Length: 483
Ligand code: ADP
Ligand code: G6P
Image (cartoon, rainbow, N blue to C red; front, side, top):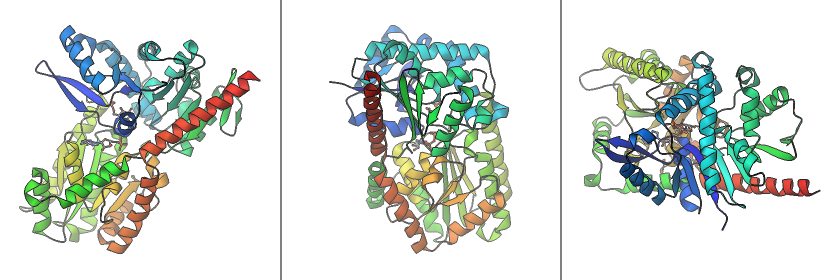
């Protein structure tokens, strides 16, 4: 039976060592949370890095990791500490991530890290080649593995290969600064189908293909050597029912069964029926616009002082890539801003910002989503942003307001949200006021349309459409080759 092999740097589960024992948790981030339900349904395998390096593993621990990941239909790619330093922390997260998110000032170009990027992409290729059979489909994900489609194609010319980029593809003017640009594009062109979240990213990619590789593009196909590569946009959805149903359970739960976090939130609501909770959830990443959000919230409290002691911002930031210096700097900046704003505005009965720097179990995430009146999502650049979609899915009474940055891929499909420019504090302050005062009927009208769209285009549907398009592309190509 043919299978689909999902490949990404991060597996859906992340293994860590705590006191020499394995600690296994679900991975955080749009790719892992989104693809998890797709993988659970299918008969394929998922190839990726466990989160531990080879030198951390004794033979016994390695066996334990193998058993744990095999249960989840996963296969690991062994990485050394040097690989993690140079390929993951280095090239992936100090070069490609900032460059593709328009943070030129954070981008470094280190030849030794580029060499490591190539070597690790080859390690992934080796594991796939051990596991792939003729007739299988390989679906490669994200910016850590841009060279992989070509590496597989070179050894298995007839296999069906899809590639999906979960982050923005930047404009030609940004991409052209990249020293090894030809090689990267050629790596991606090893795929039969290349997918992006939005039409804009697709357009940017095609423009780089034309201007850097000087290839001809016919609408959205590229004739490349003896193959045709198709490029298209597929906006990723969420597991809508999972979030909606969890929120339903939460709504119907008895008081005594409520989580500690939910009890605290309930107390807050009970203390003042006009009080409002604004929620923000992200990995602690400079692309997410967290300092801007905090400054805009401070600006809002100064501009509209009538809301002091009425509004609380819950800031949930998940630790991410904390060995990269820019992330450490962001952590310090966030801590300082929260401290300063709370110090400036807090009263004996009110702290304006509740700040959590940690990951939370799914049940607590649902507590936060369902209790919040407003979601404030302000990335300065974000490929998609699934948190915005998850918030909408949990609004079982269809109340609530989503304030969303127009710099997110999600904003392209979420026109009924209140869209803002994350650099315009005046606009954000006015929009928070508008959200607080929005009549319930208007809230419901907006959420209802958003929910219908999210339900229709769920992550399962997204994966189905991608894989269907890949199949069609491959069939057309085979006809083309046989002519
Ligand atoms: P990114 O992929 O850049 O991290 P997304 O918004 O697309 O951003 O995806 C983030 C994913 O991580 C969401 O599915 C969200 O539910 C999950 N997540 C975010 N914060 C937490 C947290 N504190 N605990 C558990 N899951 C989280
Ligand atoms: C984003 C990226 C993913 C990545 C995730 C978490 O969603 O698109 O590829 O896995 O962030 O980041 P991490 O560096 O922890 O894998």
